Length: 206
Image 1 (cartoon, rainbow, N blue to C red):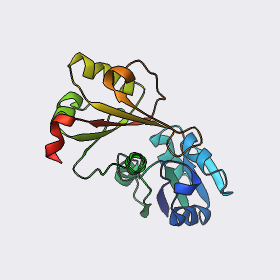
Image 2 (image 1 turned 135 degrees about the vertical axis):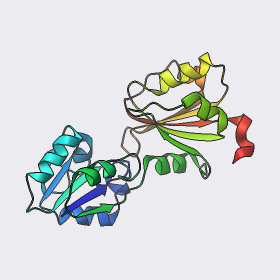
Image 3 (image 1 turned 90 degrees about the vertical axis):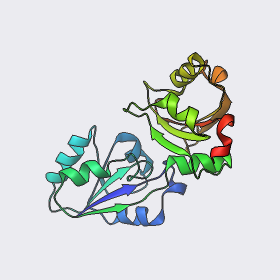
Image 4 (image 1 turned 180 degrees about the horizontal axis):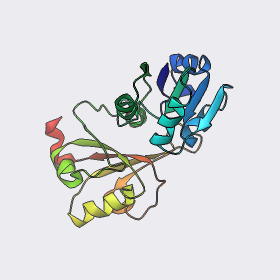
């Protein structure tokens, strides 16, 4: 049996009780380094994986064990669920987690129904087109498609918007920065962030 467990933004306070109980009942917990470090208080055997393929290999090498595969955020939203489901023939159960989008918008006190939800983490999307068409767009960013580079892209296109960037959400060193594209284009951010773009010219679309 394999459980795919969402651990939310990372801190213990935001991991659902059902997720914590599921992990405690498993023989083995597998995840990327940051996810494993977030659950150091759970004493079960843990293995740090460095890729999705390695995660799948570890699952297949332990067919008699009850396994939790832990992932940041919600595993059903730009997460690992589809990869494991498409490549593993055994029994699966997904345990949801609080997404970083939910956490970020709650911290901003902004409702986000109708917002565009996108990921630029290892993906290419029509970023400029989408932010021009939506009052609110929320993005997962990475090292290449960083908030700084995206703000530079917006400046190049002459786009005037309000931008929020969240780093290390729910951790002790959490930081949420707001400003114009110009202001944030001069700042450096960590590899994985949540970026919110508010387009005042599209508020009627909400």
